[in-house]
Image 1 (spheres, rainbow, N blue to C red):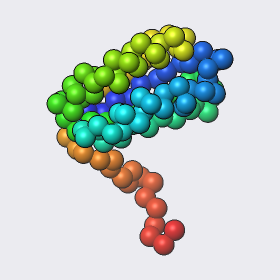
Image 2: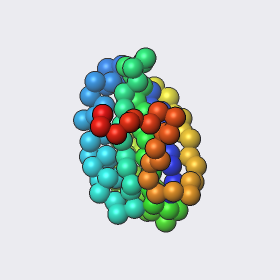
Image 3: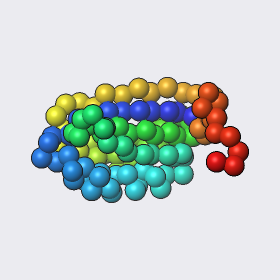
Image 4: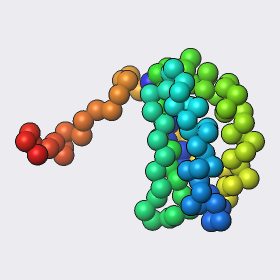
Length: 110
C-alpha cells in the first residue's frame, strides 16, 4: 500500500471550518475504490495544524487519486486557506491494513 501522512497549516480564520472546507474532497477520496483510508486529525498542540493520514491500495490507486477531478479541484480550492505548502511523508509498505502495536497490547476482556 501507499501510506501518506501530510501536515496542513491552516490560516487561523479558517481553522475551525477546515473539516467543512475539505468535506467534499474527503468524501470523494474516501469513495475511490483504491482508497483504504483518508482521515483528518487536528493537532492538540497547534489548533491551526491538521494531519491527514491516508492510504491507497497500490501505485495504480494512488495515480487514480492524483488524476481525479476532485484532486484537481482541491489543488485550486484548498491552498488559499493555508499558511504554507503542506509537508508530506509518502512511502510504500508491504501490507494492506494497520498492524497491532504489540508493545501496548491490551489484555483480552478489557
